[in-house]
Image 1: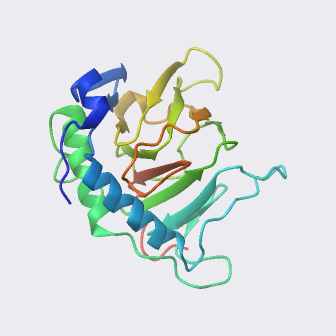
Image 2: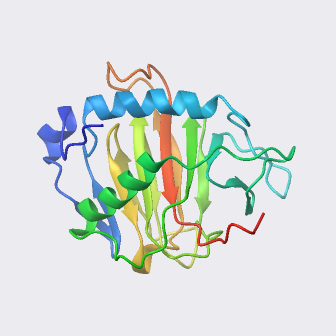
Image 3: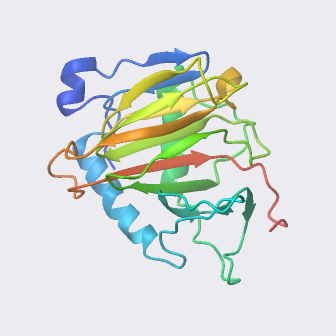
Length: 229
């Protein structure tokens, strides 16, 4: 997969320059070129096909998430990881490609690759947002490793709200994430609250195989032992 640092409209506007949103939180516009985006969209369709498919999880208080989600490497449900699906089948393996993209993403955002002793990236969540889907402010805190979270955006543009580590409310910064953008957050921002208050339907670029909606691939290092789950 060819992955470049800038492409299309995003490159014209931003030039692919990393933008620090908060300490340890970096936005790299246009990181994936159109061909790489198209390849990832095709892979997301494959990953969403099973064994569990795309699911809307029910939260502990009874609410149903509006975002549809597929898991790779480890199965996530609020708020735990396991190696098996609820019906006992194994979760789809974590692709080597995503581990490589995560390491390259960290290097692009921070100007240096992850340290050799860093825990391996081994879990990904593939999230699909239709025009009505939202993601409330939350922390990614179910992992035992503190490696940076790597997020890739495909399809429709979204408003990504990146906050602080203490509260779901202000202060926060709204960042517009377009198709092909990379967002990495670690270090002092690893446990920052974040969410997606809205998407912008009809903004997906042509030619990537996703006419409507937004796909987000979030790649993490679980820090969990294989004996768990």
